[in-house]
Image 1 (cartoon, one colour):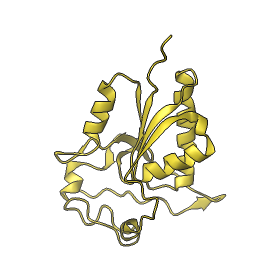
Image 2 (cartoon, one colour):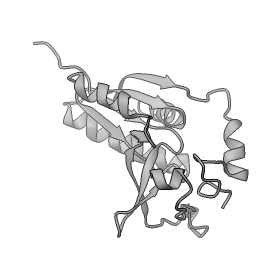
Image 3 (spheres, helix red, strand yellow):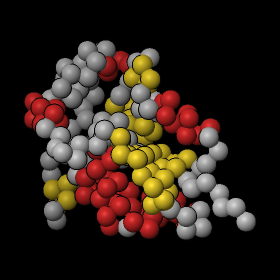
Length: 181
């Protein structure tokens, strides 16, 4: 009996998914209006911590960015993965939060995917920061993986992110939405 193709899991990079308000369902990251500096919803995390854990806010991760304005982003990759015949599962995470927290969520997601596919490990595609999270999961639970592709993963360091995190960065024409606050 021929075994089916392993499921494919995609995990995006830093700033790579929409953030949606839990109560209003409104996107807070990233819309065309925000990239054009027509609106500037707050995306800063609460600075309150309890028991070594940063408090949650009302924003939650939604689907990976298919396109920004009319420029394709992850859309072509996700379309290709969806059409190739194997089961496809995009994993979105709140990229504002600590990677160790996301690592735990990703491992649990991989466990669920693996269970759905009778123990068959996933082919994981990890882009940038998603690759770092994938690597951590691979080191902890290699049995959840069939294989992994690391795309633009900063194994040698990601100093380019320091400016984004400390000074803020322009997003399209918007200089405030991803400001240092």
